[in-house]
Length: 89
Image 1 (cartoon, one colour):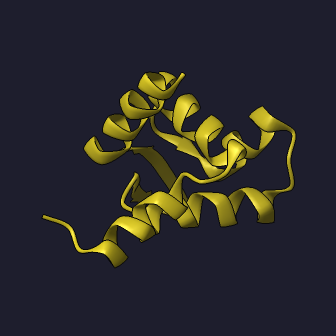
Image 2 (image 1 turned 180 degrees about the vertical axis):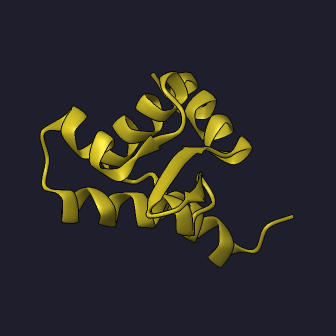
């Protein structure tokens, strides 16, 4: 069982509408780079990077390095969080 602080870290990872949108995008289109995610939402690259960083800290997104490019995809926990959010709808 997760400790309360661990649960808080996970919850903070998806406690933003843009981060939820990023989770949904990566669920539909895995292996996107940061610039591809940023372009999709027409948002600042630095801001998008911060959102993705928080998702990664919460273990909702995995990163795969390929040279200078970092690809992002949902982790199993990220997929579970999306299912959980659909229940709340």
